[in-house]
Image (tube, rainbow, N blue to C red; front, side, top):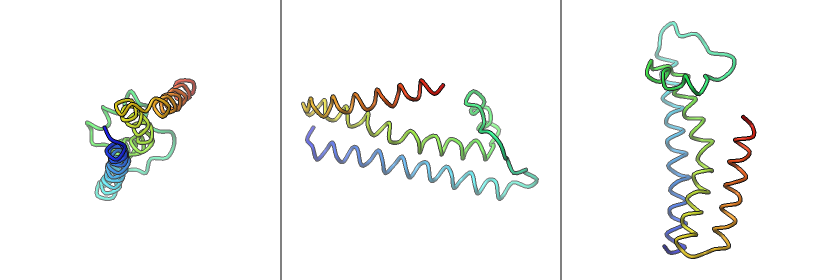
Amino acid sequence: MTTARATQAIAAVLRWGSYLSAGLLLLGMVLVLTTPDLPLQVGPAIPFAQLGEQLAHRNPYAVMQVGILLLLLTPVVRIATALVSFTVAGERRYALVSLVVLALILLSIWGAR
């Protein structure tokens, strides 16, 4: 994989992650505005274990929460894409840096639990 192709893949991850998360946030807002008698949700986020069930019930707040989660995960996927791209291109130094950054992020997420 060439450096130009790797750059294109990384840019595509960032672009489409942003587009998808913005689309989900917009869809959730439209659902909130068009759902009669829906109370405004104030307080903590929907627990991750209940998110799938809430999506199945078409909860607009669950849709928006998935959009936010996708927005937060987009940079992590970008780093993973860079790691794969640099590994395939034979760029060991950059692949190692990507691996260290990805490991630090994942350890931080795991430690926050």
